[in-house]
Length: 300
Image 1 (cartoon, rainbow, N blue to C red):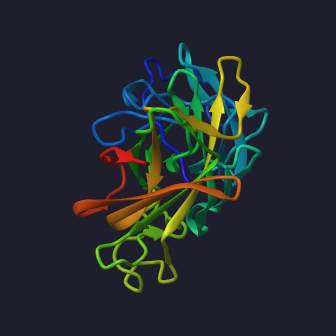
Image 2 (tube, helix red, strand yellow):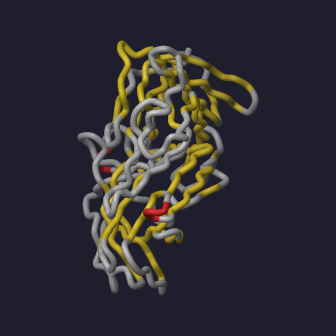
């Protein structure tokens, strides 16, 4: 499973140069539920989230880097390239990095697009913020000077609490298993949005075998999260430590038809560190643009 999260920073604009015929296009994103959030997030205050420079967006089949900063705004840097015709943009572009993101993106506009997420990195910073990919898409007329993105998934906010007073827990990978009320898999295997004219791509809806325009959609039960820590100097450790009597909180994308049971299994290498199941009081759907706060999961 794959994805990205985004929305308004304090100043999310920048003066574009030559619109879509080279140089820059300003980028914006819609809110996730009542709160705004992009790929760099503070789980205690998602309204403060913002884009991360140098991440890439696929525009009409070609990846371009995000430029700018929180003070002056963010933009898509087209360099000296010309982009003709209607603009179709998907975040992220295809990425396979050493942090654990493994996402394949196809963007052929109205002729078909797909986002296939094999694994997803959650990078927790020393200040408690984290960056993670939530899939988004945007479209605009030819020569537009801005792109307004919207989420293709819903999201979950997870808190893992270590109740031990003496022993920290170190994990480098989490497997999130989501099932429906009857125990069947809940997560879409991939996202295959279809553009209706120049509108935001639709996503599959309904039960397997009843999905309009995408009869081949399948469900799976689990998604893999690679857990990383980043210090103030930007140095990354490919694991996360949950301190004794401490906790970590983070948000992840979730494209599910219905969610009733959530199991989190933590690993350090090949060793299983913990496994906990959270059974929700009743099944919930996870519609696009909605963030759900899952009650704290005590891992021991």
